[in-house]
Image (cartoon, rainbow, N blue to C red):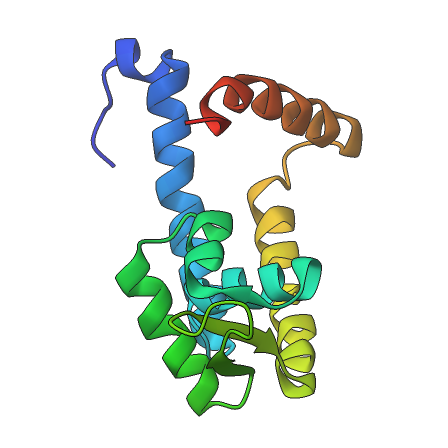
Length: 146
């Protein structure tokens, strides 16, 4: 492996970006092995937690671009994991809802981030993991409103 300048390896922002790359790869590999995409997991999780929603709501909740939501929802409809129908409140919007097959797929996909967390944080004790999660949450909080 190439040597990395010390000034980088002591910068939290650089370390976070490296961890993000590593995490993205682990999640991508795990979700792909489970026969899905990361966007699928986000959408299924949001529908399970919050109930039926418009595609626009899903985009906001899942932090996804509108075109990515449309493509992922269409894929999930084809797989039978979600239903899409005109919203009863607003005819020009689609309302997306989770099917029982989608709930089953979500439970299957839930194992992926669990494994990623375990693999990624293996060097840390449970107490250190809890502290790290608490600290990341505090650092991220001011940016959540953006």
